Length: 272
Ligand SMILES: [Fe+2]
Image (cartoon, rainbow, N blue to C red; front, top):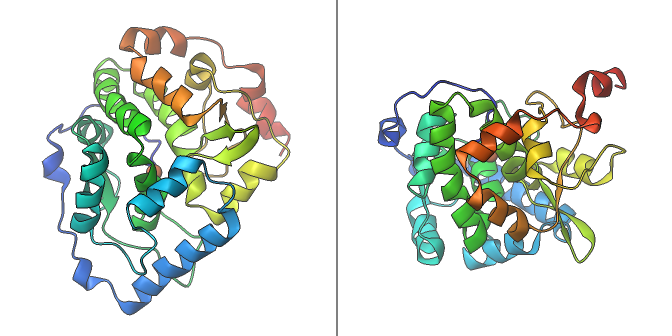
């Protein structure tokens, strides 16, 4: 998921959203695009990813050239944490997405961006979905937190709390930063897979508040441009543990809190 759109619970049978992977349809150019993106991210950010992300790349043998085949990658991933990857045509509705997570299935777009515009992404492609998300699905605390988000997300959508759930997902799984040995590191998939926003998140002059559930649940996000702020977790494992323990009741009550001062979007937007 990279989406921000909150949809009412739709079909929760996630299998209805699966398509064929059609791996053989990828051209040599598509594979070259993957290789360029992969090499560029590793070259620029090797020392900036959280450690379990890099470990995941090695454990899953993701450094092989070319777009990975989902079945082969799923077999390696399932052996680590029980997760498998499923092909989809694009963004799936929230209820179906959370149903997938609840069953330890992660959706992967069955297409890759145009290699002539490496940084233009209309919706998440297989590079974002695989490179950004899959390495950390091999990390047990993340694997557990993602499944917990699936269960919680389903309950939240049904209870009209989809917005809070999306905020939580956005501020951690997609755009979270984390500390390791005091250094700021890239955690979220939207950062790990983006050449430009990773740099922005690490270096731009903007608020980087310490992650807290209440603040994250009360803070809106942007889906149309770089984030105006990034939450920094004490560690990936610390935030995963908090997420795994979160209940619908706590989500609802924390989500009703006031947005922190640094997150007041009207003020932040006025500064741009
Ligand atoms: Fe994503």
